Length: 336
Image 1 (spheres, rainbow, N blue to C red):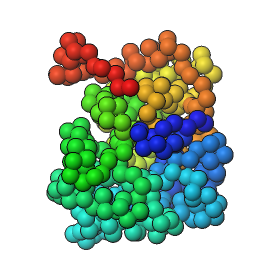
Image 2 (cartoon, rainbow, N blue to C red):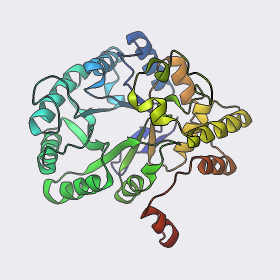
Image 3 (tube, one colour):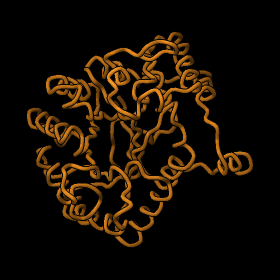
């Protein structure tokens, strides 16, 4: 696995990131350890978690693995804060109080004195952005976090945070984590251009669209019982959210290309994403070590331009105004 610069931080991360949301949920501690060992053996060094994943169990499993392996300094460790971690009125959001308390709890579970990346897991409409940025700045100054990122923010929120951070708080936003895949390409309209122009790293969550790009779901067939759709795990990944004519066009294109290339559908879908821009780091979320091993096979090769064009055409979403107008009449200057 190759390594790439994470935005303009100077930090080098593996081109694939291991997401740990499955740890303590569909992956027990034994499977989680096997996944982590495999990921590191393949050159991976970027690990992503969150305080809310499985009531902190994900962080705890990751922390115990780091302690047993004794390789904390070799890893780039990321966690997040926002969603409720208790029933109290101050147990969620991006207030100074909740950010500080959540970080201390995350550090304890992870068994470390700092995070390499701490992310706001969602935008908070109830807290002044200045309050949130000031809290992150103070944690960074205290050495408890190295870099600050955001996740699930829209473009105007992201730009405002970048400008306020630079002008008023001495704080640089290092990265954005957002959904991006062959069937979720609206990220390309504003979020990716902002990241490119402002030098932010980009972490793509759900790069296989909750399994819809892995080949486990086929048109006209019942979903496997032991799948996210079959178990009805997440609202976001159910057919009413993911299924469309575009989805099936993309899956059918992936099937053809995967057969021609001798790769799995997941490997082709992830490789397409890796080639969109060198600043993109897809986040892998695996239920089993075997699934992770297959996903890691997305690295070390490249789709041809013809295959990329086929996937681009199959997944091309309808573009609303003003993006349609700008695509036709204005040319974007590529970031260097």
